[in-house]
Amino acid sequence: MNVRLCILTLVLFKAQLLSAQINRAYFRQLSDEPQFTYADAYLTNRWFDFYDSIQQPAKRPAMLADYSFMRAEAKGPKATALMRVFWCRNQQFADLYFRKQAQGVIDSLVSIRQYAHQHNLQAEEGICWLAWCKVIIEHSGKMDERKRRILVYDGAIRGMSLLQNLPLSVIHQYHGATYDIIHHVWWIGMYFFKIQEYDLARRAVALGNQWAHPQLDTKEEHPYGYNYYKWQFLNDLGSCHLRLGKLKEAAYWYQKAYTFGLSYGSSVHSSVSYGNLGVVLSRQGKHAAAIPYLKKAIEAVRRGNDRQSEFNAMVPLSEVYLNLKQYDKAYPALLRSMALYDSVRAFVDQTDSLDIIPLFAGLGEVYQHRGDLQKALYYTQLANRLEEKQRKNDDARIFHQKQEKLEAEAYRVKLSQIDADRDYAVWLRNASITGLVLVLLISALYLRYQRKRRREAEQQLAFITQEARTRTEQLTQLQQLREATAKSATDENLPHIAELMELAILTEADWERFRQLFEQVYPNYLLRLRRKHTMLTPAETRIICLSRLSLSTKEMADMLGVSADTIVKTRYRIRKKTNLPEGTDLGEAFADV
Image (tube, rainbow, N blue to C red; front, side, top):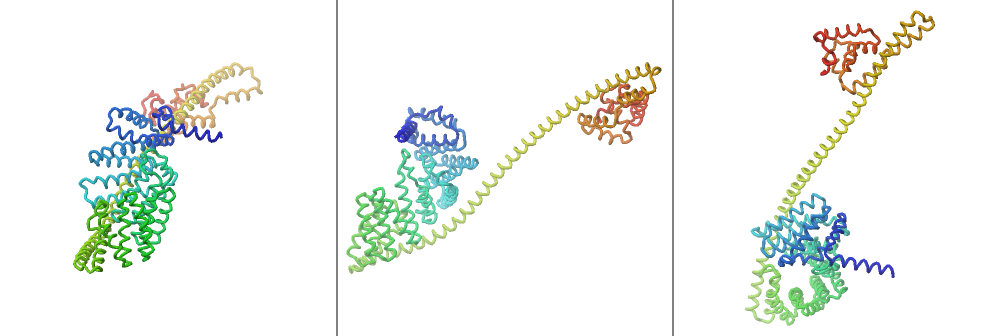
């Protein structure tokens, strides 16, 4: 009981959510995927409200405010693409049919398609391809038929190729009114069937049959729903196989369509498929067995006033009677077919199409059986002329279709190369930007590390310098102590005094530590100094380094354990070797080495 109550509460909450104005605070806090689901349900529920707002100025500001809010608050490419596709299909498509202007819709679909491609939104990109094909077909403008077919070949194959690789769980997210994926693939299948591209038509309707889902019936304002589309796809699969001469496969799909039509109580749909089974039997040579199927289909579609379906069943029934030499039954069936033909001509490509030829040929055969040779000759010759013209048209059509397919393939390869070049350019740009950012980041970190090391080295050098001054003071004190106690000191105390004196001398280990710190503060200074002045000795190099620290002569002498006179003489030799004027400060002279 509690579970049912919870489910009922959730259903009511969802219904309230869909019927009310958009909850802006709730929408704003959603992430990309929940935003997409929420917005898709909201826009599907209010599809016709937006559509009608074009003609209702008082209603339009509120609708635009909702849309503008959702568009501005969309957090990811998926929700953004939904908003863009909705506006294109809802608002621009309306303008398309009102003003017959297709270019704006085409440009928008191309832009959205490129956006989806950049963000790897395969479903959105595939649907935009199919929607683009629909606009190209319906509103070609000055485009010739051949170029239009080439574009549709390429666009439809691209769209279906993108979509067929997606899992069903993803496809079912796009059954809403905005994307309406089932309608698009059904429409493309119908187009290819009309131009007799049965392999492509079969591919399209097979995808539709795979994607159809009862979820279609849960979408508000959906034009047909799951049962209609599912039956259409099953029946169309049978028709595609029938036109391709695969009678066994055609019978299989017609039987499934018939069974499915019965499952939801549609006598018209089930009867149409039942009649199509009769057509298959007739093609298999089982003419007598086909008659009950065709009659049942005709009775059902007459009750539904479906003249197109009646024509489709009446023509093969006439052929069955002719094959069985039942001319008395064939004649009224042929006359009824001719009468129906005038009312369904809009569904047939041309007056001399293949659909009318068997009727003329059948009438010629009936009149010949009746002995009316004049009418028999008239209808037979008329059928022969139309059949010859049809044969030439078929040969030309087959040739042109093959040529168009080759051109479409070349066009697709060209577009693929353009897309690949664009993707590579984008990748190269992103890689360059990423590399530059990494270089700058590494450089900044390295400089920061070097500055830190230099500060630490400067602090340690300052400590050593202070230590040198302290040692100088200690050495002075020890010197004074030595002079004061020299007369009174015993022989055994003299070694201890000498040991204390050695503590003030800068040893090799001390110098090595000093050199390392000096190199951190002044990187590669000693190396540059030796390269520029190769004649300098290690002792002279030490004097130059200590001069950089601004130490006095006495401090240098005490640190190195030599006399002040030795420091003065060493400075003199350095100036002479490096051609420096007398009295030049070595620290300043060698600062820019």
